Length: 516
Image 1 (cartoon, rainbow, N blue to C red):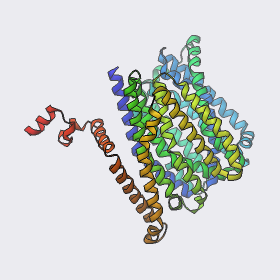
Image 2 (spheres, one colour; image 1 turned 90 degrees about the horizontal axis):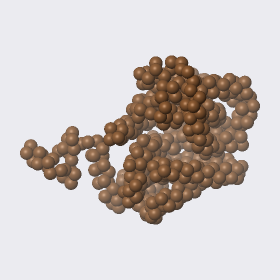
Image 3 (spheres, one colour; image 1 turned 90 degrees about the vertical axis):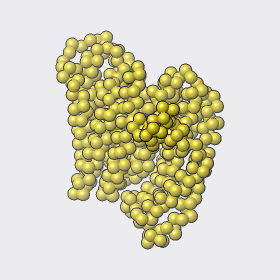
Image 4 (cartoon, rainbow, N blue to C red; image 1 turned 45 degrees about the vertical axis):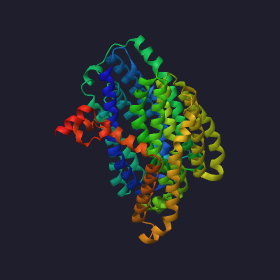
């Protein structure tokens, strides 16, 4: 068990390191691509991905989690799952090619969406080829290999699309990038899983009992995933049906660029580290409470300047980075920037509910979110367009966040009030940062000779200095704790003991340093 914990923790660190290293590059490339293409191009791709993502949930049939958790012969389970998923994926691809026209009409994209759907339907079959080797790597806690397959594939997708966009291929540069990026992921995943492939890929006699067990586990997992799908895609669908591809492109790109950093943080930290940590503490409520509050405090500290900074600099950031054709994005960008503040707290609740054996609370929270979001979308999209959709999603997620705080408080009494109280210093720091940017924005723009990259860089530096200064003044102990945590996580006391502060040194380490 100790070895398992070490492997899981090490895998989480690998995933976080790979993500934090390569995702900024991915964001930079995405910005370049946005400058080259029109919003409608991104809108057509986003509408086709609604269908593709739905297909992936249905054709997966819950086989991925079934492979990860099974106690049966893994070679049989992997073979059965691969055949089932690949057959379902190929069938859906064929159906999408035949029914592309009614699908396009249902999504609100018109005739220009039909060929995009037909080509993007190939993505579903490609996903079917990739999913089982990925599940086997996840089963073995090989998170380093998962990261080395996933993020380079994302980079490849954009790198392929950029030259095609420069040559004038429009939406087809995005389609080609998506398909070839997925091929890259398949090749890398199969390479990392190559040791297991000859064993499970070989045809095997079908065991009905094992297959029934796989579906008994997989179907409920698929149902939970579909709830998440509705939660994440219903807004894009309604924007597409009411407003068309151009509005979808502006809306989806604003969401993607503003939330990518928050997702990167919460996926790396909450998904790979906190769940096993919470699980080990589930019987020690005081310790679990401290861990929950500390992790929430840490993420609010990191997300607050990012969210507020993206919001207050939007009027200069969007035209400078993306170009004049994206100006309609500014109010949507501002709303989604602040929306990112709600995601980490809600995401922190999910591993806690799973660790204490109450995963149904996650489903309840999703249903609350959908129940609030859909009526708000229907009411606000009409008069306010894509901006109204962004406002509806943000308000619904705020309510869902408060509901999750309430649910956590039922498990760990007192955490709701403490979560609110410990957030106040960061709200103060973020507010002062926003006020400072508002006061100096016009003078800085005049000093820099216009709204350009230099003005944006100066504003970012000033905002960061103000935020860090306020946090150091009111939360000095948090900074010390972060330094201590980093020293322990990186094992600096073993590699360079002389760099370790005296407060963290053991008597043996101190004696060794004195002798030197």
